[in-house]
Image 1 (cartoon, rainbow, N blue to C red):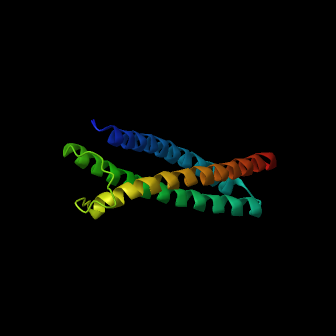
Image 2 (cartoon, rainbow, N blue to C red; image 1 turned 90 degrees about the vertical axis):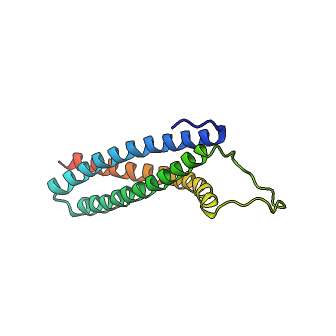
Image 3 (cartoon, rainbow, N blue to C red; image 1 turned 135 degrees about the vertical axis):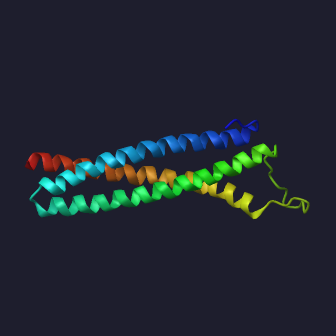
Length: 145
């Protein structure tokens, strides 16, 4: 999508980066699920299996989160495309300007963009901690094998 408005272009580029990152995470999650499934299938130690099952559940939750955030990003992209096609400038309303009327949807989408940015930042931190736990568990499994 080509956007002539620099502010909209920035948002679009951020969406593109996020979607690429999400694509990578989804691939990585599939890989981590295979590691954990392998541990569960081949391991006899109950405590390792319990942790592996717990981490599998966390990965499933992360997959659902990423699907939801992807839908949100696509909704934002639709909004940007619509705004770009209308050739509307980004608007920062003056609180005293009663002539400014933004649709609830426009306001919600722009507010959601900031929330999405924060949700992804929080996800990055949580997901990194989970990956570290999974790799530690995998090391324990390999030592016990």
